Image (cartoon, rainbow, N blue to C red; front, side, top):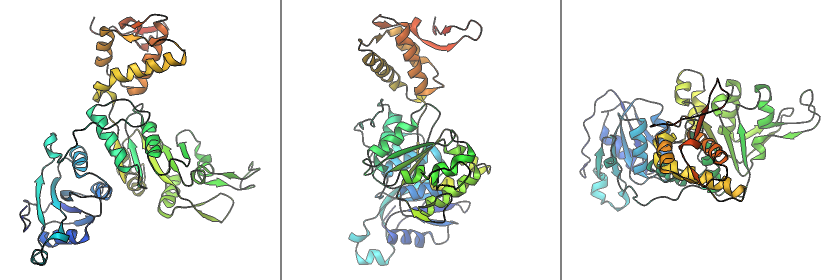
Length: 397
């Protein structure tokens, strides 16, 4: 864009979203749009913009290069994957250094238009330096580099994070890394598997109860949420929460207050909330199977973990890591992988993701006995239903 902000070609079929921490810049863009888009909304940062993009029909995002919470290049990469039809227009927010004449004229510093596609050209100022893996995680593939960067960007904030990805991709490891890298690391990380607690017990487990609150409540109990005071609450498999509990969780997220069963007393709790789901929560919300307002609250900052099949460069390092850990536990030398075994591992579909790879390596470490090399014959991927014994896949033979 020029100093007078040349507008991109816009239709009237979608809205415009303006993301910037600078209210003056946002108002200038609104003024320049002059009714060319409906609706026009404003977001103060990257996470806020992502939440609003989920809610409406947008044709253009005016994006400040200087966001308080996200790198603009990373945000554009997310938009490329999740909202491929949206045009992105980059802005510069150096209004404080612009001249009075420029400000009176509604000028905006030059920027550029970006149409999200599948290439790397839309990621301005992308950092080519490899990012250190998160605590407890292995792999330096491009897909995981994006995850590491997103986690490190948001770890220090109170922003609610939704970790999405197939089963076995390491969502709990990401949650633990977010807690470890946060200022709350000295306080508790409380993990709640929402699918493992019966519906009838969820409220008392989360919020706690007083003695005599219900039959069998012989003593008061602190709930999982107050137990996480000052620290982090991780809600795993959050999609399994019943609708009634979703409403109560939403109220907690909005008010930061809880009420234990059996008392009218309201207690304020300082907790950072992380959630994880292996299903598409947005689709569930659209079908009415999950509260949309709760989904938007949880997905203030989404992080999507790739399946192992999309990060094949990490397969061998992960396999060798698992072998080394199991050998160390037995105080034995770690076996190596033959070239043939590596080829099979890299060609496998890995529908169970990293967890499946861990189990395959555990079986291989047993089957190799005292040998020093794992070959194709030690790789067991499934069990034969008829024979009741391991079925060894000799792919490529």
